[in-house]
Amino acid sequence: MQTLDKIHTSHLFPQVDKLLIDLLRPMSAADWNKKTIVPLWNVKDIVGHLLDVNLRDLSVMRDGYVNESAEIIRDYTDLVRYLNRLNASWVAAAKRLSPAVLTDLLEITGKEFSTHIESLNPDAEAVFSVAWAGEETSANWFHLARIYTEKWHHQQQIRLALHETEVLYHRDLYYPYLDTSMRALPHHYRQIKGRENDLIKVIVSGESGGEWFLGYSSSAWNLQQPSHHKPTCEIRIHPDVAWRIFTKGITKAEAQEYVQVSGDEQLGYHILDMLAVMA
Image 1 (cartoon, rainbow, N blue to C red):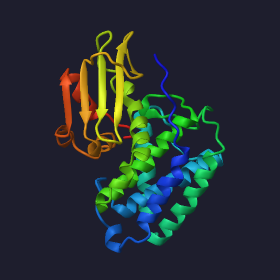
Image 2 (image 1 turned 120 degrees about the vertical axis):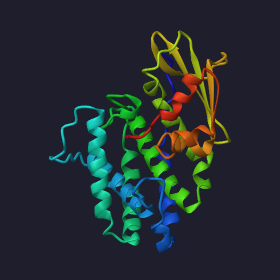
Image 3 (image 1 turned 90 degrees about the horizontal axis):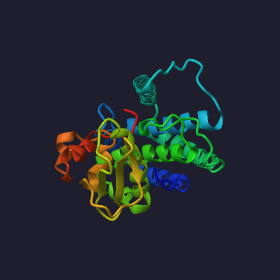
């Protein structure tokens, strides 16, 4: 298996946080109440969830605090169920907070989190693994990249509701999101039996997109460095829907209209079920 480049995102957190704060400050009451593509959550609910992300990560990563009443997690399903309950309870409580209070707290905690992660050794073991990539332990750089994708896609959900999506599609911000999410490919394809030297080429089109290569060798799928070999199948995804596919933000039928597969269609369209979130 070839070694892939690390994904560096620490320097991006202050930038995406500032973009969000600048978006939230002038919003009207109607904007805060707009529906989003997240079932049952409006814009204000997502902002409340993002505050929880900051607070929870600071508590665990910086302060080493673990809730004594946390549930026993036996498998991935238990973990998703537990996280869903945590998210729902926090968002319900955050409904009591005004938009101004939420924004102020989001700004303060975002700066504290950005300061903390600068002190971390990127190669040291993270407090949590990236479970959607199939890892039982992860390095800090990957854990932070995972947090970056969470902040990126939740902000984009807000921006989609407000019809203000373009800024996050800048290559410096979108490509790291995509590159991190694509690390889920081997885990997602693990139950699909390939043939030796099968090669899947995934393309997200546009200036902010890129190419990723998933190869089958020795009974396993692994991400590879760019290859000039003819792929078994080639998947081309429109940039506007790539992030929505990986976050349950679009139905499979809707997404298929924006995905082109050439070659082995069974291999290609399997990507429509891939998730790079805990869900």
